[in-house]
Each structure stands twice: as C-alpha cells, then as structure tokens.
Figure 1 (cartoon, one colour):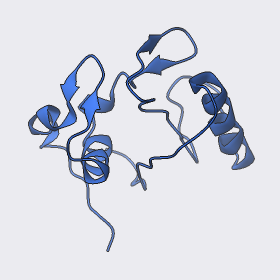
Figure 2 (figure 1 turned 135 degrees about the vertical axis):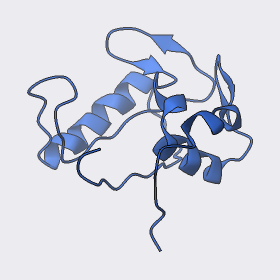
Figure 3 (figure 1 turned 180 degrees about the vertical axis):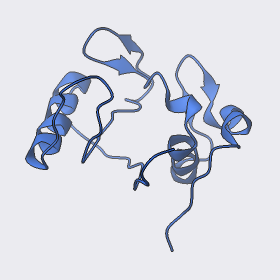
Figure 4 (figure 1 turned 120 degrees about the vertical axis):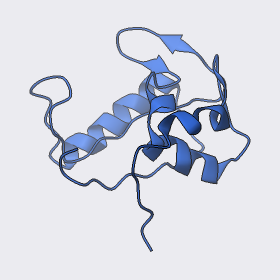
Length: 110
C-alpha cells in the first residue's frame, strides 16, 4: 500500500567487508537526500545489503541475510532472476519462499 516504488536487486564484487560496504551504501543514500528521522520513515533511496556470500551476522548494525528478504516479492523475484538457485544462508533456497509472497503485487518495467 502507499506510493509506488522502483525496486531492483544487484550483484556486485567488492573488496569491502560487510560493515564497510553498508557504510558506503549509507553514504550513497545520504548523497541522494536520505534522512532517517525514525525507523521505517519514508525514504528517497533505500539501499539494503541482502546477502554477503554465505555469511550470517546478527548484531545491532547489520543482520545478514537481510531478515525480511524472504517475505518480500520485490526482493525474491529479482534475486531469483539473478540466480535461480540462490540459497539464503540459514533458510535454504530462495525459491522456497516464492509461494508465500505470491499475493504481493509487483510489476516488471518494460
């Protein structure tokens, strides 16, 4: 519900460790005017770190894999386009979660 958003999933190679990568992603958000007045506030740009190889992390600054990625069609479907066999560390195949998000409407851009 609410406004429409553009969502995408990208794969990249980096020499940065996960926390450093998150810091760089947040710098990009700030450069595009991202503000964080409160948790889940509306945002102009939201760059999330979904996976980092098969790493699992759970601390105050970073949780990997992203804790809600298996609940969001706009994450799962593009992720599976990148890699139909991708595994979510500690959860199994990303494909196993598609049925649970099938009621979420997303539309691919032409």
